[in-house]
Length: 124
Length: 179
Image 1 (cartoon, chains in turn green, blue):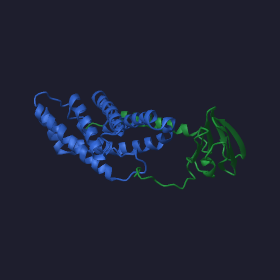
Image 2: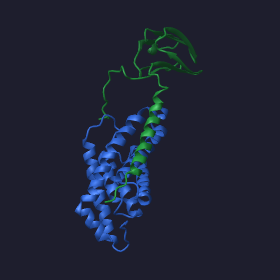
Image 3: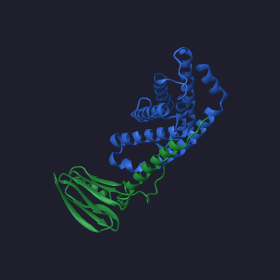
Image 4: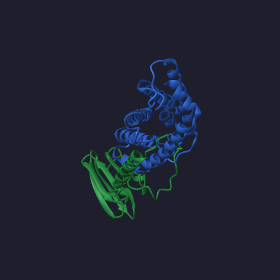
């Protein structure tokens, strides 16, 4: 069986280069959790580590969110049921709070390194 | 050297059936092995596709690829879900790349290179599909581990296929029976 490994090495080198290029996509991914707020007026992004208040106008009035010590909650909202306020504080990437009447969607995005969640059912 | 013959069609179809059954069995074995992420696969079921390169002509090879997708869909239960798109896209692209490389590059590429190129084609196709269908741009975050696992397992599979092809008396007898 004749074996010339030149082509093999070339293919493996190309594969490694592709992997190296794909690793480059991690570079612009900070991993710092961010608070994304989607409203009628567009999407707003806040740093989860900076304490702040922010108010968003929606169909039924204003919704105010508060970011404090790496957690976020809805401080006040003009909606009827106040479900978003009773949702309380959220802090982990993937957590979210929604105020449906006022069309405000608060989502934490970022690295899930600190997430203690395990493998889910379908990912066995 | 490529031992395709037009004379004994029934025997060739038997090869396809045999290799497809082999792929079905290996899909089952692969399904048993736990994986950290659902998309990380060892690609065991690609082994018949690699071995079949030397025994089948293009149409039979295509048929084998389709049967492999079908078998995998049956075993994993994803036959009638959108997951089958990933399986289909990956298998067809890798089968195409492997066939072309084997046919036109076999003087300078062994089955290891063919296997690696096939795995890369399959993985990249599946990543693109997952970018379009499932995750959007976040798909690039799973790309590096996905590709690294693909590279390692495909090298191992390629070495195995190379050994199998050069040592198996069954394979040799099929080659001779064919020419």
